[in-house]
Image (cartoon, rainbow, N blue to C red):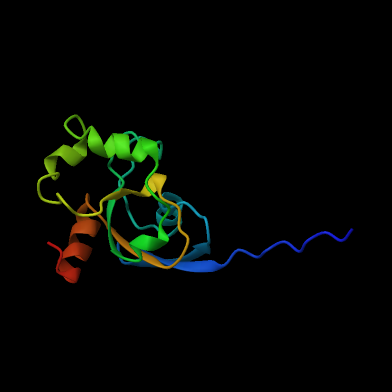
Length: 127
């Protein structure tokens, strides 16, 4: 019996805080941001607890994996986290945590914290 050929994972384009990088499909968005030197905040080290890696998808949101239970919980318990300071401003927007999102296709996101993220949001007219 012949073994089935392994399917090749595609390379996909990610733009994170204006930095472009190509990663393998299924790569974690947080790791892509680290590799691209995109300057996403990261207080908890990518464990889905602090919400400082919160991003706003600009395009390709459908190419991110669905929110995990931990992500929904962390974004839902906002009053004790940094996201509380900006929650009202981004209410109703599809905020995601980069540490809990995996890339399945081309995506562009911008962070909600930091100088670089703010400059990119201003440039995109999201400020």
